[in-house]
Amino acid sequence: TQTAEKFEFQAEVNQVLDLVIHSLYSNKEIFLRELISNASDACDKLRFEAIKNPALLGDELTIKVDFDSEAKTITISDNGIGMTRDEVISNIGTIANSGTKKYLESIAKKDRGEANLIGQFGVGFYASFIVAKEVELRTRKAGEDEAVCWKSDGKNAFTLEPVDKAGQGTEIILHLRDEEAEFADNFRLRSLIKKYSEHVAFPIKMLEVTYPEKDDEGNEIPAKTPEYEVVNDATALWKKAPADVSDEDYQAFYKQISNDFNEAAFWTHNHIEGTQSYSNLLYVPQKSPFGMFQNPEDREGLKLFIKRVFIMDAAKELLPNYLRFVKGVVDSNDLPLNVSREILQDNPLLKKIKSGLVKRVLGLLKKQSLDTEAYANFWKEFGDTLKEGVVEDFANREAVLKLLRFASTHNSDDTENVSLEDYLSRLQDKQEKIYYITGESHEAVKNSPHLELFRKEGVEVLLMHSRIDEWMMGHVQEFDGKKFQSVAKGKLDLGKKEDESKNEPSEADKTFLEKIKKHLEAHVSDVTASSRLVDSASCLVMDEDAMAIHMQKLMEQAGQ
Ligand code: ADP
Ligand code: MG
Image (tube, rainbow, N blue to C red; front, side):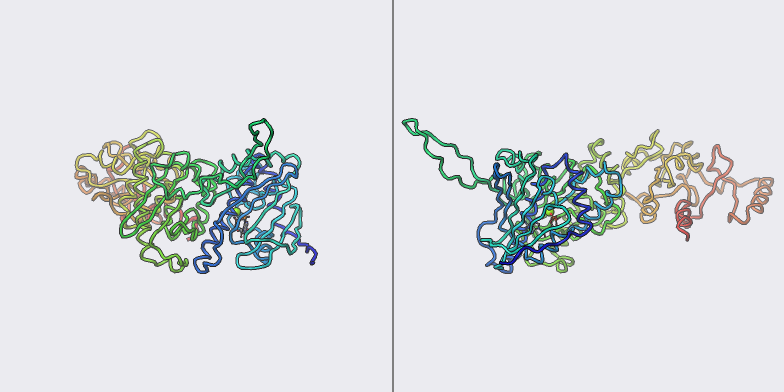
């Protein structure tokens, strides 16, 4: 027989191991969630491979959890896809999940205290070492004969050696540290499975508990041999009728698929029948996750299933960028099972699903917007992301515009709670435009001299100061038939009330204006008398087609 071969971990694996073990100490029970989630992924992958090669599908796909309280071991096994020796080396000896890696790197640089957050994210296989002093992984790839055993104490190195293993799949044996022996307990494990893995779509089984019984004469008869029983719910939650699913179930499922530590804010769950039949369960989180704005390209969060078979994370294919905060599951009955990502990209069936999902999400947000308080939180977290939709999603522009909330001169503070519909409901007599101002901060726009006349006339102005506002307003012309008009641009036109040309300056004023104009020649293109000011002596006005002041400043800052 061959002897074990020794390998060193990559340097970054050591870092991650160290970070995971130390920072998750207060949340150590998540090791089971992570290992079961890997087992479930392995079953998903097998089912996917079996589409091409049905011979791979043998027994019912199952995850088993066993323990030995005397030996202080816990064993998590699955009959999923398994791994070859090379795959073990590349998957277990390195950090596979690039998102996890980036995240861990970024918090490793920061305060250790923040590292407590990492329990929210998939920390993966290495979570085993929070409770285990040694981990043994035995695995056999589906369709292959050879199995391999990986062993490590989580300190710098691991060994690999060939091993005999009956079926396909993976078995992970945790040798618990003495102080963690309490986990090798029937009730503890069952409650952790219920808590974290209730909605894993494969059965998670444990041996039933049996007690010795007494016969009629009072003699003990030996307990019968225990059998495996299913501990979790094990159905695909998204396939159930919404009426049969409790809020607790929805929240638990959300945590399972999102790795979010917080509960979901709200969700929508539908079974759609028609030219396209599919189910969707879509969640909006409470908090904007880390990295949301840094890399919209490698977003995750929407899982595509076809007839309950997990196909891939397909966030980009299923929802446009501006709805990237949505998480959940879509299960199609009509897409062909053998789809690839390339095929998905321009599949007409998927396009239909995508536009249906967008309508669902916008509808959900509309419904939520009736609850002012809940919507305020959503707006704070995701409002700027949603604004991208005004530019990105022409077909739904009106619907997205209705969901926007602004600060306004109607409010006394910077609260963003004014919708465009609110604005229109307060239009003054003869007012034909939606007036807005953009700038660098709420303070700056609120105190702008451009607002003086509007205040005097009682005309509301929307106050915008987010970076994206300028860009957005450059793309949108009107809402509900009313044009948007920046108060800092071009001619002022408050209905017919006010007409600058009628304010023909006197000869003396004209001479005065000429003098100022000469003086400022290098800086301004014209100097005119204005009726737009009430208290201030002067203000800058942009030409109708010029970029707004703020944009110009931004460009200057960027060196253009
Ligand atoms: P992630 O699950 O985010 O990819 P993990 O650290 O949990 O990261 O797992 C790393 C990799 O190891 C997985 O991507 C998978 O390829 C492999 N792996 C882990 N557990 C199993 C298992 N039970 N069966 C097959 N492969 C597994
Ligand atoms: Mg994992």
